[in-house]
Length: 266
Image (cartoon, rainbow, N blue to C red; front, side, top):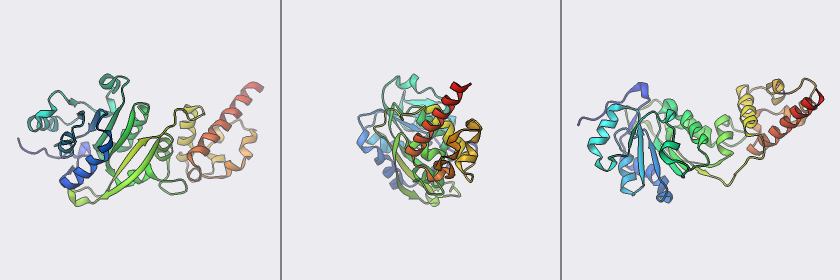
């Protein structure tokens, strides 16, 4: 069967360097006992190394041409190819409540959404690794105080330890992307609960970084009563990129208490 033609609409850039594919596959070397889901395998450049390493592998692929190619060229994947959009896939239907891991050369146009999806299954996904555009990879791994630090950084770092492993140049892809790529690994930390209202935590993080040039006092004003003493708290003079994950948790509890106090007064 002929090779698959990369489709711009799906954000496809096929990796051609086998040594890079092997390095990415090796990021899961310590997890061979846990079922593994590969997202967007394309023509299987990463898949072959995952099969060689004897992972309990399933792959999910939206592109029908790639699905056909995998079926012809990887007989070991018989019954293990899920022809579906990963973002719309109910992973409970595949794994139930069991733990599993995720890997992939992620489509550039949906890489952020993929990691938000991983977050939805944080109690089941112990490790997630793979390649995406370097800018997003750096954003996920960025520490507080850096320009790249943002919503994804805080939400993912609350639940995962994150390593930026290595950079991949443009010329090892077909077609070559316009940007460099980065390989990262997320490993689930020991946190079982953030110790705050997790829905409010997400709202505060997203609202804060939605106006990242403003101080927290200005960006979060709409979440608080007009006369709330919390608006005068020193933390409110800071910008969101200055706060650690723990400080966002503390801030969430302070906002929650301020809202509860206001409700009691009414």
